[in-house]
Amino acid sequence: MTQGAPIEDQENSLQKFFRIAWDHFKKTSNLTKLLVFAVLITALSCVHYLFTMINWTFPGFSLDDSWIHLQYARTIYDGTPWEYSPGYPSTGSTSPLWSLVLSSLFIFTQKPIELVIGTYLISIVFYSFTTFLVGYIVNEYTGKLSYAVCGMIGFVIMPRTTWLMLSGMETPIFLFLLILGVALLDKTDIKYDPIIGVVVGLAFLSRPEGAILALFVLIRFLMLDYEELVDWKRWISLIITGALALLVVSPWIFHCLSTTGLPLPDTFYAKVHPPTEDQINAWRFWWNYWLIEYFFIMIGGILGIALVVEKKPFTWLLAVGLVLLYRLNVPYASLINNARYLVPVFSFFLITAIASIAKITPYILQYEAKLENPLDRELITLLFLIFLMIVPLLPEYVHQADFYGNSVKNINEQQVYIGYWLANNTPQDAVLAIHDAGAIRFISNRTVIDLAGLVSPDIIHGNMSTIELLYYLREQGCNYFVFFNELMLYYQILLGAGVTIKLTVHLDDNVISGRDTMSVYHVNWSKVTILDYYYP
Image (cartoon, rainbow, N blue to C red; front, side, top):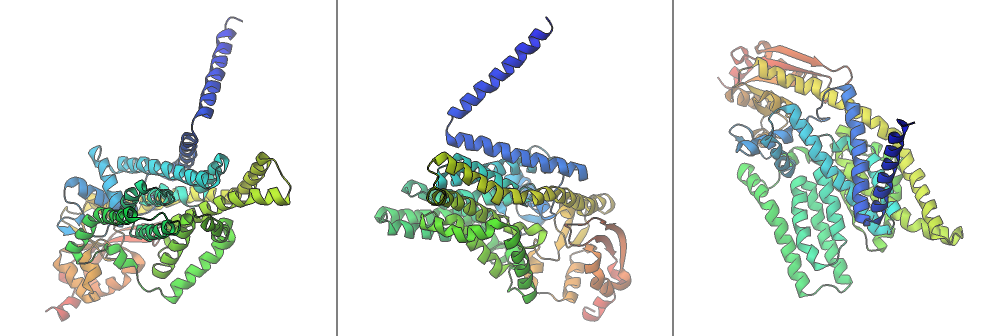
């Protein structure tokens, strides 16, 4: 008996501790509660996905492009910013802000796997604050903490959200700034104007399409004018807002102008073209599928008008605006790589749908179902949100966890593996012509020429014929091609006896890489005869 007493005392002490902690938590502000819930919900999802990944492979990124951001981050730390290869300034960073943030990791380590883990940690921090902002907006729109928590859960388990937030890409900081922009745009006080200007500039630096917030600054100004809240001070404030946004983005624009003579990054010029009919058809196919699969898109698109009427239009406007932006400019590029461009679109439709339903349903229940008790209306609305908006997402959320692990495995076994092989089997002054510009460049630390043009200005702006391109590669001392085998066939025909395969990597379970098979090709230019006809 004497041995059992201490255990009972410990149990009582533990119960007392949790009771006191819960009582204290109940007394905290709604913002604190939202933050705690946001961190908890986000952390649980990230742990789920990361542990699932470990069952597939070692830590890495689910997209090769994520390594591009780390490479730019390394150049910032090394004091040669935006030189993707030594001596070759580039404007190929889609998100200079994300690379700047990641450059802080190099203060602590240079090891790839530790940099990957550091990127996870930074991503999770931004992810948690984004989840919090989702809850904050829903709480502001509905006045109910329960709906806000429901909105945060829906945001986190929405298929692709955690997949992309842990991919190493810029989405955590981009989506954080977009949702922060919405939270600020809803404010009418003049003191928020300069902060909005800074956020607009940072959003552009996180992704070029972040500039869409500038349009909504003008819409907000018109709304204020309609409410007769605009005076001469507000006009001056609007000018200051625009000036601050331009001040934030100007260093990057000046860099682009000085490097290529164009104001936007080369990723824009490489990807934005008039869409073909096949690309438009692919867009239509997938959106027809998503409109059936994801109820929240249709609900948010239609019921979001209620928020517009309530003078809270910005989540709806962002969802619709981004859809139009991607459809008109990059309908196919927005679909590939697990539709990663469209995650912000889905997020804003989801937020709009949950907020709209939460505002409309209690009134319907009050007048149609004769439910006079507000708690009854809130409970039924909450159950409606859970079973209509959240439960249908769970199967694909679970599937995406395995898809995440499989994707990381693919990149590790192809691009990362080849990067290490090149580091160990090629001279340090080797120059590589590549198609995937991420892990191969970062891991091998070799000079690269990106034949897709994303990080090589000479390629994207050179308008070279194939023969001119081969001549350019020869003059640059390029003696290796690292290419998908299918895409290399044409070059192999032209290079003839001058090209030999040194390494081939094949993926049996490929779900994310551009092709199943990639090889390292060595080029002996003395045996390439075709150039002699054009450049004797």
